[in-house]
Length: 88
Image (cartoon, rainbow, N blue to C red; front, side):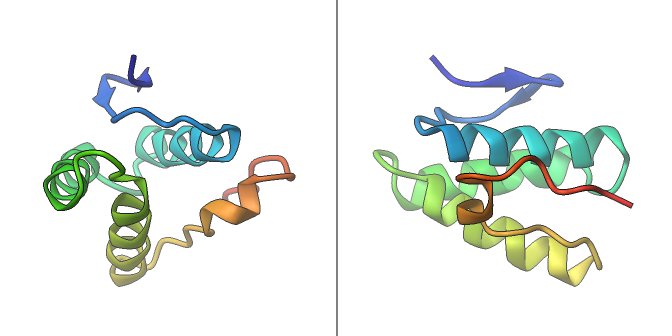
């Protein structure tokens, strides 16, 4: 079962920190800071890279693409023991 939030077909996030990261990405989409189509395209890319474990590819590509757009996207390890970072 995959995480389905904000009509984004995000692949299966298995750990708590991954789920929090995906929730943060969805929050950025809802705020209009990143486009839904970008997230879906990166998800598809990550699944093509490694169908069994796409999350690291998703995280890396999201960080790169958000950086190009001036959006701060913290690494997933920051979500391991902290609340969601505040967005401006």
